[in-house]
Length: 68
Image (cartoon, rainbow, N blue to C red; front, side):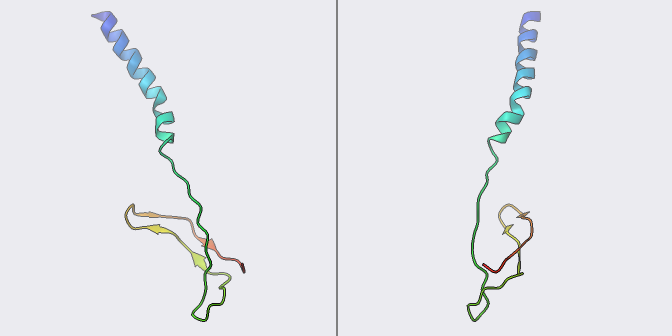
């Protein structure tokens, strides 16, 4: 009986120790590029852009466009 509890406890400790590595596999990254243009089709430098995920309720960091 003691051996069974010891085995369970050891398995639990090892499982909890591995949890951060398992969770890190769930992180995703992406790259987004585009051009902000006004109604006449001209590039808009200095525009603030924020990505928002409606489904996840997540808001990305603000970034400011350059002249490209």
